[in-house]
View 1 (spheres, rainbow, N blue to C red):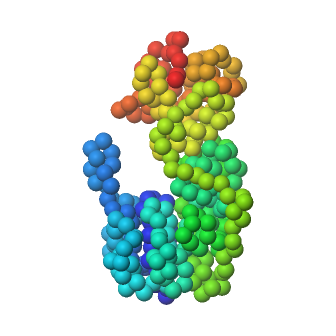
View 2: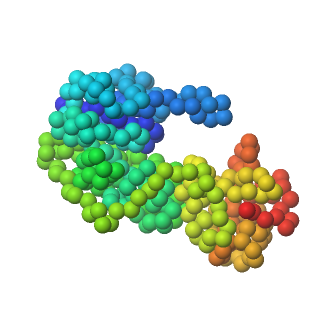
Length: 308
């Protein structure tokens, strides 16, 4: 049985950890990021990986950094064959990458070299990609630049949100780990170098990135709504109030100035865009619950309303 150290933080990573444990692979240690303040109350929140590790009595480690002789000595003392990393959030310096006897394997949510970086799932939706997938990659010092052991792809639904795609990819990543990890450990599955000429990058998402710029084409805005659902949520403003838009479809109706309301109906609020128009179907006011467009219209007067 391989001695595995697992490193990950959010729910995406937790699916890989869960798959390993349920297949009989009990990591000798689980690394996750320290608890972080979250929510309006800024209370410390435990990561999904920490919660799972504690519930299954796994050896949990939460270092602030992987740099320095102390943590390096702790990792060496585990005598690991493999490090498995999924959305950990901390860079592994070269001395740490050199610790396991077999390999450091990363579970990455794209078809590398497309969408290296922090937010590959959202980037694929934003770009209108038809397919994406999971790569099991041999880690090296560069950002997602290592050679790929194996990849599997799936179609992106025309109306699929990043959250829905995330869940499917997380499940796929866990399944691939269980299927291929032994072959990676024994050297029966060898990685193939990426073509750096085809590389694209998906940077960290800022709240400002999710703002709906109504001068853009409707189909691009619809992808933005999907890509930022559930985090951070696509948003716009109306009468100085910031609104979240959770669901939208492209409309065939024609409008005037970008951001102006073209029509309202129980099916949605149609807003003019730089090209075409967008039908908003689920919205949320600050501090309120998500409501249908029909309910939203009952809450606010949309006569001559302009979204900005």
